[in-house]
Image 1: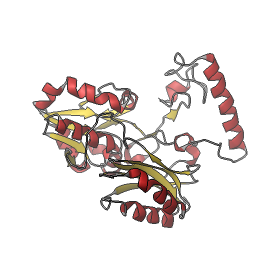
Image 2: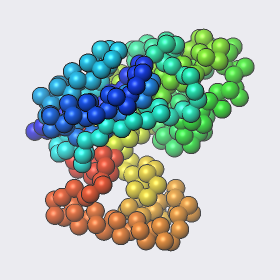
Image 3: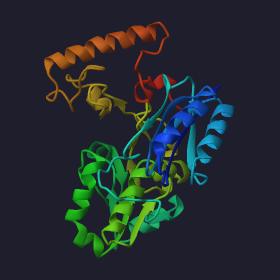
Length: 315
């Protein structure tokens, strides 16, 4: 039985002084034997916590008691063992980094579209469909008709949107991302640039894959996730990708069969981007991880995305 509940959440709101919230929040969460990370910024909060059913319920009550946070929504999954090493509450400039000042999704944002209504929207030839995620994410799976802006980070997206502003202004714009936070902020950016006919997928790709039958789906491929599942398919079943822990890119079975792939050290994506000295460090780290696994221990510093798939979610 999987006793660990994992809750992911984000909420755009206005915290006038997030620094004052950090220590009390950490103290309250610490009382419930939780592990994970919560990010606080003036624009809201974003995080993932793991613990018992009772602990997670208490955590959600604590988070919703923060100023203007009663409407916080969350998603849950389950793990066979604790996926985090410690509990952290961190202060950030943004809960998802775009690097553009005065973007406030709590004030102005695009229209939410439920997964059941998404297919109709993106099938409309008058709709431009934009993948708000990074290039490597889009390459392993995306929606039909979606444009991949080819960005390496979310902070690159505003420049691409500005470059295509005239084209976007003429049609409806539908945006999507993994869990909803990036596309929500991106639609707020577009609204601020005078593009009003903007929509985004509520709950993101994950909610779509969870709720829409594969036979009716417009999704093609797998969805990269920022945890040790690496990728998921329809129904949130575990995908075929594993993660290269040198560059954190997803690697499929073909990539793992390549001569460049060495677990924890290199893959096709990064073989030409790392030095021999770096690969030597990665190899030493991988040896320590292997030894820790053999002892049944969690390697110090090992994070949510690097825990072995054998301990993965069952959703």
